[in-house]
Length: 217
Ligand SMILES: Cc1ncc(C[n+]2csc(CCO)c2C)c(N)n1
Image 1 (cartoon, rainbow, N blue to C red):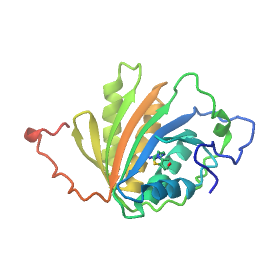
Image 2 (tube, rainbow, N blue to C red; image 1 turned 180 degrees about the vertical axis):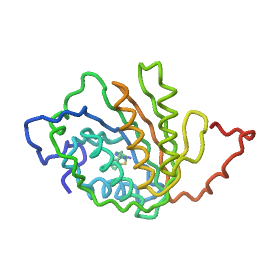
Image 3 (tube, protein in one colour; image 1 turned 120 degrees about the vertical axis):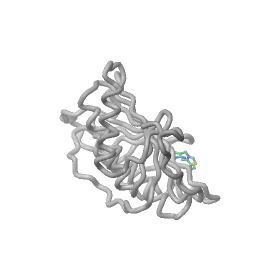
């Protein structure tokens, strides 16, 4: 209840940045397929506790920056609040860590890792995600590791061109994204991950494809 559109979170954290981890961030939009989209977006943003992240919303998207755990806690909460309306909602976001030269949210790195949002995480969610380890010759192995992680968490539902598909509750999907991102962030200095999530879609989910039908595994 502490953020306003077009203003960075006002609840000021401690002015001393003493965290040791690198700052992470996510620029994302939610798209509720509803006549009521303005209040759904505004409610999702306002109902989420954002006091442990730097946050700025404009007419296109919202940008969050802080510790990995809080970035994922906050985006999940915002998605879940919008999803709880029952409307078909799409989330599209770019996560990043290690982007050189950006320090405007560094003060938030001194927060502890206790998450602030009690997220209703049961909504069935479909997702596509892609991991981009930058400037790393071993990038394909890191992507394969992320797929293994998703498989072990029970959310991986197939490779598709340019992305991997995840299915599960929103909690399971965001947990997978956070784990894949956190693991890869330890291996590479600059990492980008994109994710598109959908819930309450009127479209049926695709049947899992056999290899000869074009599955990319
Ligand atoms: C997470 C998120 N942040 C910003 C927008 C952009 N946006 C589109 S409509 C609207 C409400 C009226 O201003 C806003 C802020 C978005 N779609 N999703």
